[in-house]
Amino acid sequence: MNGNQQKQNLAGLFDRASETYGTHVDFFADVGRHLVEHASPKPGEHVLDVGCGRGAALFPAAEAVGPTGRVLGIDLAPGMVTLTGQEAKRRGLDSVEVRVGDAEAPEAAPGSVDLILGSLVAFLLPDIPGALRHYAKILRPGGRLSLSTFVANDRLRWMPVADTLISFMPQQPPPDPLPHTNPRSWSDWLISQMELTGYTGIDHVERQYDNVFPTPEHWWSWMESMAARAATEAIPEDRRAEAKRAVFDAVDEIRDEAGRIVWTAVMRFTTAYRR
Image (cartoon, rainbow, N blue to C red; front, side, top):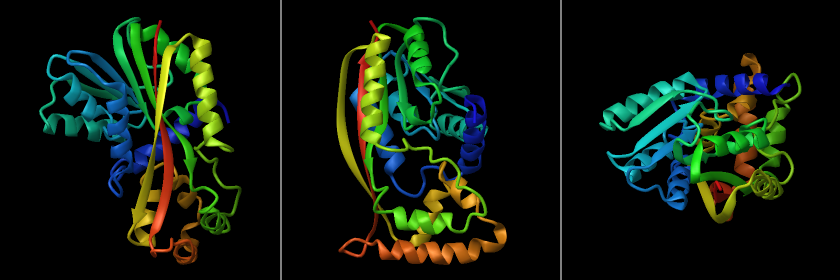
């Protein structure tokens, strides 16, 4: 699959997920808020949020830059853009603009942006080195790039659930949007690419998030609210009820000692400066 096809597929997935994206657990909102805290936008700055989704980083950034600043959010999924733009209007944020755009190559004048934010988007970009070079062009000298990436997740503990889900798919499962082998190694590679591209002052912190789901049904709904819905959509309609029962049984089997359904992720927040 080439990069353009990958982007189109992801845009379609997130468009179909846009109504419920970020509504089942606080994970996306927390990661977006913590990314903005690490990036420290200043009043009056011009911020670009690439892959803005439903505004998890966009709205905290708008609050930080205030009415004298400007925040532009772009996303390939029209549904995300429409709903986030409506929310910006509801909040009375005249300094916020949301439009359809490619997170890998956002349209902006050279040297016009103080801060670029990418919350839970970098690992979805087919050409990371190309994106980093493009970001450097549109950042002003001394401008910042701040990204959130996975460094660990519960992939192995949840493998029995994934295997059960895959067993109901008539064909090969869809590609996993997360880094396929070692998320920490991928995040380390990302930092090395920043260094090669000429970014300086690279700093990062890590946080753990324990996402708790009251029921297997709640977890399933969360799955369908993001790119992972590609897996549920791959199940034939006439087998969905059977698949959900089997998957829910598998989810029940991996409850923790307290009986909770928990998916844990460790995120890295990285900020780098353009020379």
